[in-house]
Image (cartoon, rainbow, N blue to C red):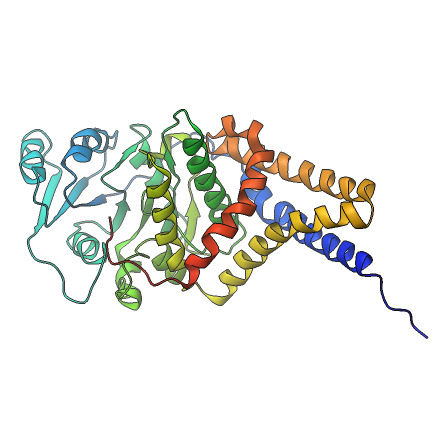
Length: 374
């Protein structure tokens, strides 16, 4: 007669399975960013490019950040299309003043809301369609390039049939716990979308720093598949249009953009909940990979605690240490690549934070998206 399995042994077995899944993600996917070799310095393949920025009542941000886009070191033909989306502040006058010194700055002024198209998609579509050049580089009004070589280095990756280039949109480093949390969450998201893209499974990009060919935008009928959603102009479009052969990444500190992070916990939580509402529309393969990683991370801590109490604390600690070493090495090297290395010493705290993060934001997957794009 077969004896019943001891429930404590079953719990430990599940812990081992969850740990193996975690280690596989780190060693198969995330090591690709952690040990990514930067492209050697050399000749950059420049080409005509249209930078597109959408803004609604962003006069203060435009005054602060537009000069950084306008003074880029770029010898080929280029333009900056500023889509002024129904602004009622001084944006128009600021743009007109800048046009006197920067002839490449073009303003597309929208004075009417699009019916049945919520969010940023309509102004962004208008900007892309009006672009003079096939290569389109996107960022936001609250972003500034990290260097004068941003445009050059983002565009240089359009080689060997590439149609989409994914960049990193970082946040300014400031004091305080919230800043560290925001920057870690941004890093962790980039760890996934860069690593998956390097593994031939691109699934998203960020509108703060993203480039693609106008042709791929038109071929995929723009944002028509998800015009009813306020978000998704970056991640859902890339999820639909990106393939292993047409997607490249730029992991170079000079090619990053920088943004002001949220200054209150409430504003940041609202922002993340809005972002989570689009991920449920990803392709099934991507949802499975992202969900399995999140579930394995979420289950790890309850399982390790139960195993330590009821099975064997020595073995449980051994499992915890093994996973922590693999995770720490990968995270630290990946943070260095994305210029977030100051977060490395807190990796153990961020590991615990992710458990709480999934607990807090998972319900957002079932929430109805908000209509405001700002």
